[in-house]
Image 1 (cartoon, helix red, strand yellow):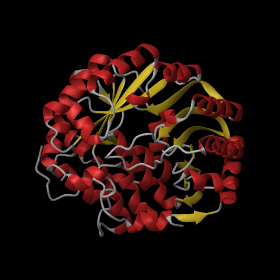
Image 2 (cartoon, helix red, strand yellow; image 1 turned 90 degrees about the horizontal axis):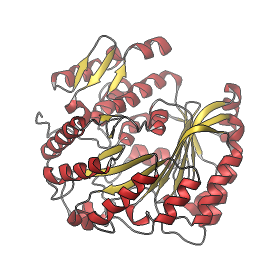
Image 3 (cartoon, one colour; image 1 turned 30 degrees about the horizontal axis):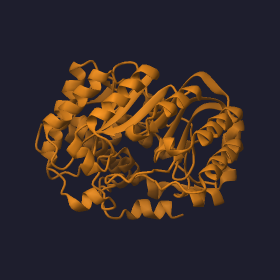
Length: 429
């Protein structure tokens, strides 16, 4: 891969949204309800955030907190909010319960959550229902319960099987124990997916390859390969320096080649599937479909609006109404194109047909530079990312947005920076 050490590597798809924030317009929840009422009931997706975690990993940047005496009240609050939205959905095609660690809820709390969701929404018979968990939470009883509740896609945050790296990350249990639990989960669940981290301090290419070999050997359906985000908020980032970008690029290229040789193809820039795992939730969000976010810190996207909730369970219980920010109509095609980068391919004709928007013209300079770097290939009807482009995808998407919205001026904003005035200002409203 080419040397690109002077360029800012944006690791998260959230980074691609920062350029849009100053253009968003704050709306009231009644305004959004009126917009949805005009559209009529449509199919959609649910994202439910359970912020509770028993452990504290050294790398996590997500909204999380220790379980306290309010967990059942929190579940009831989610269901209370869900009932306010039920008339705006004809059916639910996919549910994603993330965290935090959703399985830190008690069995009774999980039962009430899923029963309440089924009482509230019409959930398609073939809906993809995903729940995140960790290997340490993966008990036989918990897995049986999730199956009883209709969960058909289990997502386990493995991060690595390497004992030394697991200790550094604050993960509980060794690699052999994790493999044993995953083998049992493989026997039980129709779809099994895991997360693997790279760009870790002291991690070598062979460490990632060994992690992927174990995953393939178990028969994992979907593998999300994420780079570690070195946020100043996390202990690991304060203790260790980030490895050189060139090292991370080589590891990603090697991992991608290995997975493709084993029959795994990318569903999005971070997620590889053996063909069974469709990851429908990701498709909904990145194609600007109707996603209802419920719970503390949850973000949804409805009627061309982002809906962002308060960050803590206590705040959410007190006030479940999310902040609504509408995306101006003239910027929707820009957001759509930037979101398509997550799939490695941007359709050229669809935005022309839907909005009269030409990506080749709108992002001409970014595309030219990325083609010269070997990151993009321009086809007859699509823009396709190369392997190197997949590594730089979030940066490329953000550069596209910056070119159109700001004529290419201004700094790229990253989750790895200490502050983000753009993000801070919009979320503070």
